[in-house]
Amino acid sequence: MAGVAVSTTINGDAVEYLCQPDETLLDVLRDRLGLTGAKEGCGTGDCGACSVILDNRLVCSCLVLGAEAEGRKVETIEGMAHGDQLHPLQQKFLEHAALQCGICTPGFLIAAKDLLEKNPSPTEEEIRFGLAGNLCRCTGYDKIVRAVQDAAQVMKGA
Amino acid sequence: MRYIRPLSIEDAVGELAKAVGPAAILAGGSDLLVRMKGGFIEPELIVDIKAIGGLGDITQTADGFRIGAAVPCAVLGENKALRQAWPGVVEAANLIGSKQVQGRCTITGNLCNASPAADSVPALVAAGAKAVVAGPSGKRTVAVESVPTGPGRTSLAKGEIVEAILLDKRPPNAGDAYLRFIPRTEMDIAVVSAGVNLTLDDHGAITAARVALGAAAPTVLLVEEAGQVLIGSKLDEATLERLAKICAGACRPIDDKRGTIEFRRKVAGVLARRAAATAYKRAGGK
Image 1 (cartoon, rainbow over the protein chains, first blue to last red):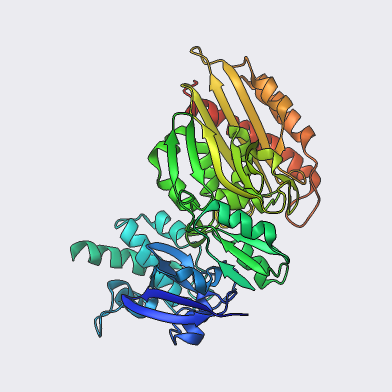
Image 2 (cartoon, chains in turn yellow, red):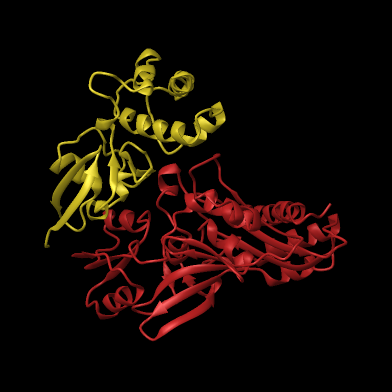
């Protein structure tokens, strides 16, 4: 199989890579670019652990081909903090202990960031529906929902 | 395997028509990539249609709406005019998968994947939607219900691409609705579903009606008799009972882990009743 040459933007940086035509964006991020924050849970778009933002849309990177990123903008968990300054969602996930094993956490943070950018004042129900594409087998979700509610308050005040 | 991203529908059709091995069309990829991963399909050619001009747009024309084949379902929900005109189609499209899937999946893909349980298809069939098919011998416009012919099978010939879905302009006093049964509240596939589309006269009597059922047969079913029984009525209790009975009788469901034949029949009737009531209200009926 001939490789596909891709020029894209990841977390604001211009990036070029070669990938196989059937290689997913998730595999490109993890195995070619060393961005291992996005995780492979199910590999079929059910668990949300591989969530990234592609041109301002939340997507599962396991259901996107690496070749499709040509000319587009990708945001991953690695771009969420500014240097040592955590994003309010990251800070609130820590304070509320909204994680246990941590595998689902990058996906939840990216999905929650997308949710709050589109709806800065979500109700609890809107948060639960908005994050329904992210599965967590440890927390029981309550702490995650509270962390997102708290972060929304902080972000509105900022 | 080759991945290509043609800039015109003619190029896309040409590449598909001359493909020697299995070829696949990529829009949102939420079915295709899962099937590739599972080893159910090993395409030698993937034609990404997202760079083709116009396929990513919803346009309002004198005749209604044209929804390009590459428009993600999330964009349908963000289009106020479409939501107002066809709330049932939009609510069905927005039930597919999670936020992540909504950002990618398309109603054209949902139609061409040809699952009997596809959420947007009963709503599109009830709405009388048309599919614009581009192929080696030109373009044709067909009723959406003629596209799926069985689970995973379509009437599309080699080289053909559905480039857009057309929805008519709405007459006044019209409304549609879609309901599905799932055992949870979100992120599931319909056990059975119903779409209803109604037009009323100035006195609230139904003048046109289409009823479609999902996950109740090998393809989405247009139940013409169910539409006919509604015409002339104001959706009184006796009419709703007859509607439910006709829908239950029209089903040809399977028994599986998701639901029994008996359960699917009963719920098809219940959902058709409820969807009809919502569509009636949306059409301004009281």
